[in-house]
Length: 152
Image 1 (cartoon, rainbow, N blue to C red):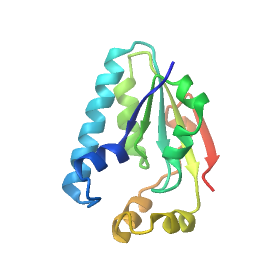
Image 2: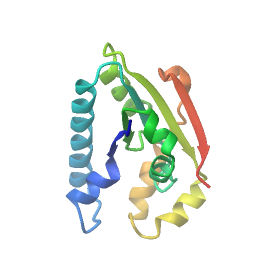
Image 3: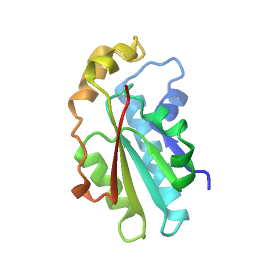
């Protein structure tokens, strides 16, 4: 089985190919990702979902795309950097009662390394704002499993 990967980064880039990050394009990207996730969840019974958490430029997408075991294990991978408890709770609620198992991949990369990787892809104020909302995920949030990897 090859996973369906829903990537916030890819959706954002498709909505804003020039790389201009603004509130409207980010909101549209989130809406599109949640819509696609809802569609994917409704099409499969008793599926397995992997969500990603970590600072921007921590290596979340790389951790997913370069690991065939992850890609072959999950029905859907939601690579959107669900850094707040509320955003993760929203996804967990979407799967409730549908027989889905949800695992969380936390890419634990130090802030300084992520900041260096940014290299003007995202304005620093936007990058810093996204980093501030990171709450380290906990298994008791409702995940079947919490996977922690280093993004260094």
